[in-house]
Image 1 (cartoon, rainbow, N blue to C red):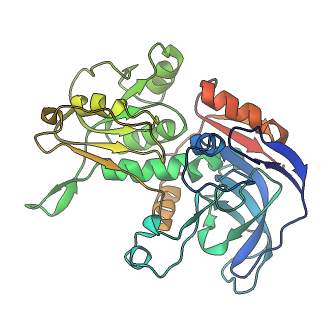
Image 2 (cartoon, rainbow, N blue to C red; image 1 turned 135 degrees about the vertical axis):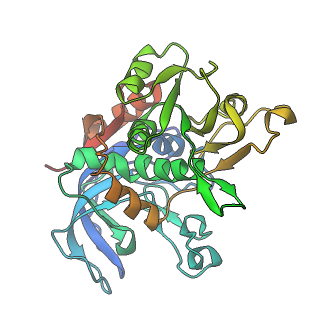
Length: 340
């Protein structure tokens, strides 16, 4: 099979010919049709995540077709179209796994990071972490849902948690700020509007194209990340990996509001006065996803419907896609098309 391999931090990925992998017990062999490009791929390329191993085949928003089953696999068949996300394996036995928090499993393995991923023609995947995909979504359009969509959706749900002991339920956050209007935000903005929330979009200073894109997707206001929105927010999600946005978002949210950091990596958060946090404002992070998150979003996506804006690249153009992502040269998501 052909695959794009990362052999060390800071290196370009190299196109190589490798032996076809064989599925082990509990795995399926997937013929990759498309694989989304994610900012986490940049963190892996730059060596910014802990305990990275090289060489690795990155790519963790995989859409493909099952071509073979390993021993012990049931409920899936050759020919099934599946999606494979960032969370690629968990132990199933630790306290986190047993309490429906498998996203925090300390032994977890991640697609395209610990496990070879989807920048290749074939990929072996844990059958437990293969999602059925909604009918009607072409591979290029559904691929971004498998990371930016899923983890963005988890962040979105947590942003709405304003828990009240009196009611014992979470209240919605009707005024939602999105900091960094890239792949995840352009999908979550559509979900928020579908559910009746008001969206306020924050981009890099001077990014008039990104701000116009946000308004096109239903944001009622779009401005620079250091701008003050026209009214206080009930919650903010930070998709950009920039720690300096946390104090800015805190100042933008109303008392009782939450700031959710949605990325796997972020630069250091600068100090800020306690008064900006006071009055029960909350800062929280989001780690990975659960299968329940995936099932919920993939059921919701056709109802919205979430329409992904996609720039297509060929397998051998992965390095260009990563460079374009870093430079912000496209709106929405980049997707590698591998098989047609």
